[in-house]
Length: 103
Image 1 (cartoon, helix red, strand yellow):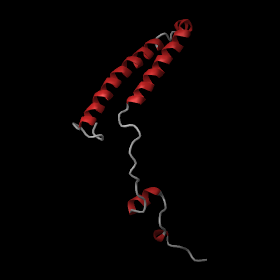
Image 2 (cartoon, one colour; image 1 turned 60 degrees about the horizontal axis):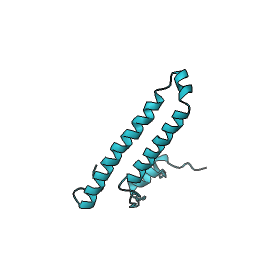
Image 3 (cartoon, helix red, strand yellow; image 1 turned 120 degrees about the vertical axis):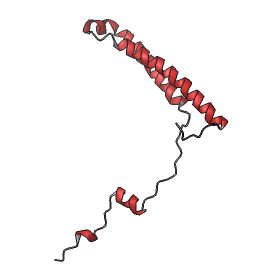
Image 4 (cartoon, helix red, strand yellow; image 1 turned 30 degrees about the horizontal axis):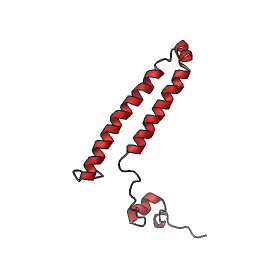
């Protein structure tokens, strides 16, 4: 039985293939450059979480977890700050003052 030299074996893992130039990254553009729909979804999620926490507020106060209410308020408020940032960034990209890949 002939043994193969381990050094002559070609590695087939993706990292090695990429290093040898056998794999090429596809040029895929992001689906959403503005981020605005994602931030709005987050704001809605925090608002729904606030309502859910309000339903169980008495139970949370008894167990000492009433701070959860303020976490949802903070998430909701920070979402609005994020929305303002995304809108300003998107309008700057549309006007040509900054590139879409720049952050």
